[in-house]
Image (cartoon, rainbow, N blue to C red; front, side, top):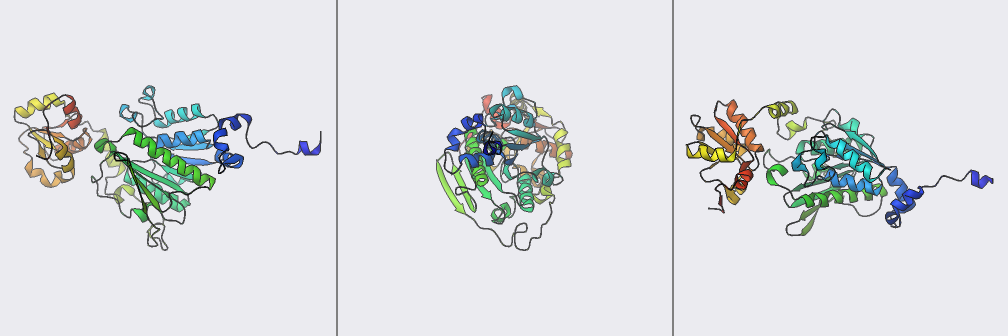
Length: 391
C-alpha cells in the first residue's frame, strides 16, 4: 500500500451524510466544509414550545450535530397546535423527552442534550457555556433578559424571536454588536403584554418564526449571508406585511455598553416586576375554586356579581352581559367596587388571569370567590349570552 493511501485523511462526510444533506451541500455557501462545520456545531434552544419546536426541528434536519433543549414543562393538549416536536401520545411527558425522541428519529447524526429544568440565574451560565450559539424560544420577559445577559457575559451569538396573535418579530445579536437591552432597555409593566394563553397565537406563525430563527442560526454558524444583526424584523401574518426596523448598539447599555453596570446575573423576576419563583410556585400549587360556565350563568341570575378581568380591548370585542370590567392589574386598587357580601364570579379569556384574581380576593377576605372555568371562550363554546362590538 502506498504512503499516500495510508496517510490519506478520513472523508469529511460519510456516504449516508452525503446523501442526506446533498440538496444542502450543493449550495455554494454550504459545501462539504460547511456541512462538516454544522455537524460539529452545538446550539442551545431555550424552550421546546412554539418557537423552539420548529427551530430545533430544522436545526436537526440541517445536521447541527449537538442540540441542547432547555424546558421544565410537560406536554399539554393546548400545546399541540403549534409545538410540533410533541404528539398526542406525549401528553403529560417532559417536553425535553418528547423533543429528544422526535429530533433523533428525524436525524441520527444529532445528539440531543436535554435540560429538564427552568433556566435561572443560578444555572444559566453553566448550561449556555458549552454551546456555540443560543436560540431563544422563551415566552416570558424574565427569561428573555436572563438569556440575553448570559449570552453577553459568555460572548455567545443569540437568535431571538417572539410571537403573539398574528404577529412575530425576530432579530440576531452578535457579541460586540449590541444586545436585547439595547433594543428594549426596560421590560413592559406586568400584565401589559398578554401571554399566548391570554392573547392567542396562530400555530403556523410559530412555525414560520421558528424556522426563521433556524435559518439565522445556520447563517451565523456558516459565516455566510446577511443576518438580522442590528435589524428587527416585524411580520404581520394577518395582513401579510413585513417591516424591518434598524437598531444600534447602545454605548450606555448597562450590560454590553462601554461601561457596564450589570456584570453578573440578577433577579430577573424582580427586574420585570414579577413575584419570585418560589412565590409563583406556591400560588400554582394552590387549588382555585372554579365554577362551570352554565353554573356561573345560573348564579348570576340569582344575584352573584361577575367581574371581567381582561383588558379593555378584549372587552370591546366580546363581553358577558352584566359583567363589570376591572382589568387584572387594577383589581387591588378597585376592591371597593366588589361587594364582599355577595358571591363573586371572576372570568378572563381562558381562566388563567381570573384564577390569579380569585387567589387575591380569597386572601383579601372574599369567601365566595369563584373562577369561571375556561373564561369567556368556554362561555361562548357553551353558547351562553354574549354582547359584541363597542356598545
